[in-house]
Image: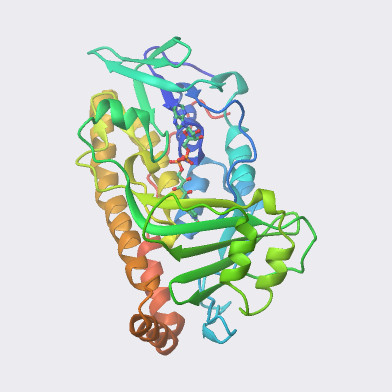
Length: 389
Ligand SMILES: Cc1cc2nc3c(=O)[nH]c(=O)nc-3n(C[C@H](O)[C@H](O)[C@H](O)COP(=O)(O)OP(=O)(O)OC[C@H]3O[C@@H](n4cnc5c(N)ncnc54)[C@H](O)[C@@H]3O)c2cc1C
């Protein structure tokens, strides 16, 4: 691969956003070092779904084919049921684009394959950042330092880069939501095509995954953060008792020790995603609630735009400024929508629940389709392929 003098980048964080940024920068001929705090890139997280905008981003990065190969179409974006099984909205194959569902670990593997292994340093937690006119120096927990022309802070919602470089930025905000997630054992349950089920103050969803697995989630209204349970699977079963098939079967097919339980936080909009030679990307910049299933999709979009600007503009601060201008309006609009949505859709008020479910049934998928089409309407900028591996 061709390397250019003075075109070195550090990416803090090897999540989906950080790895996608690394892939994009490598394609533009940058020399990239990824610093990841975890000891290895492993089976972290669970499943998720991706909309067409994310697929366009993956195509622009040159990983679209492998992205599709590790994913399964899911109808969950347009199939909405009540706990008794009644359909409020049903996926229409000729009108609704299927989303693609995959496991975070599978997608992370796909992206990591496009970054030379020696350029991903694990057990490398970023603790300090300083920049001068010529570059950025990053300090890791072990005391080691790395210097480069550009730093991408893709280190998630609790970003150290954000805290060091944007010390006045507000802390993440608890959105009064608790979420459980699980993945069934391979082949332990029949195939599902994907659905969501809308209870009062509770939303269950399921997506098929490769390897005859199913990913499921349950989000509920929860006033205080930090509530934890001895038996998460038992808690989810109790909260969905009597709900339609195959919810109980999915839970029965899930190893209890692998159930994840998290409080949902997001970020208030930041005044900027770029400062000099440092940019924030993905959840570090605009963490949002999962209610639009767009957090990782937006991280992929960020990565394409950042790589395109970095390839096109020779001044790093200028390139990052253009990235900020291009990304902030869109991501903050999605962030706002993702914060507003659960205020209604996860309301525990009986009147709001009846109103929302009735409106959803009457409007059917046409209105939802138009709303989604606006959300997914994004065209990637052309990406230089210099240095493509
Ligand atoms: C319940 C739930 C469901 C979701 N469902 C969807 C969905 O269906 N579709 C969708 O598009 N999005 C979804 N999202 C959002 C999505 O998970 C995030 O937006 C996405 O993972 C953000 O990726 P990221 O790379 O920015 O951050 P992360 O995935 O958080 O990655 C950050 C990485 O940085 C590392 N790191 C952290 N600190 C440091 C440090 N100091 N030094 C070095 N490394 C560090 C971490 O170990 C991690 O590997 C969901 C989120 C939740 C919570």
